Amino acid sequence: MSLLKIFKKKEKEKKTSDEPKIMSNELKMSGERISAVDSLSLRVLKKPFLSEKTHRLNSMNQYAFIVNLKANKNSVKEAVEKRFNVNVLKVNMIRFHGKPKRFRNKETKQSDFKKAIVTLKKGEKIETI
Image 1 (tube, rainbow, N blue to C red):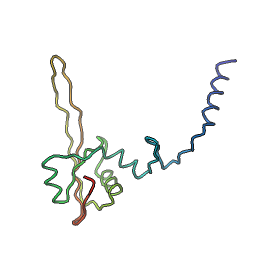
Image 2: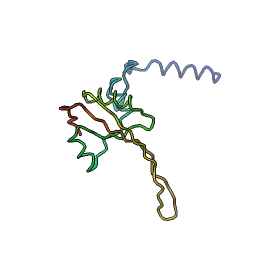
Image 3: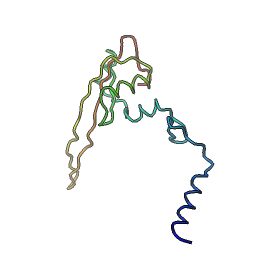
Image 4: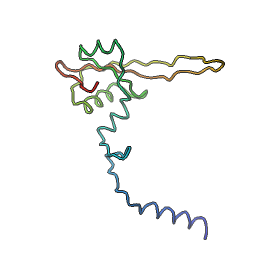
């Protein structure tokens, strides 16, 4: 049997799996299906940025998130609105460059990251932070 026939046979076996097909607007992650809305927020928002300063900002309806380096203001606004069901007034972005660090004789660099400060309309809150 030639290699080409074996390869085609394996492709047919892969296609006939018992797993249900995933719709184009859903992603499969850790055994659960995630809608396209959540996938956008997962790609853009990495995690909340928590510090003393950001806790003070929370009283002024401002919340800070670490976001993807390629994210822009519009994508952050859409992701926050869809994820937390709030209205976003303004988004400020800050790009941080990683600092060089040294441990014994090895020189490394911390990762670059981008922080987004999101201002919400008056009276709205994000409860999960």
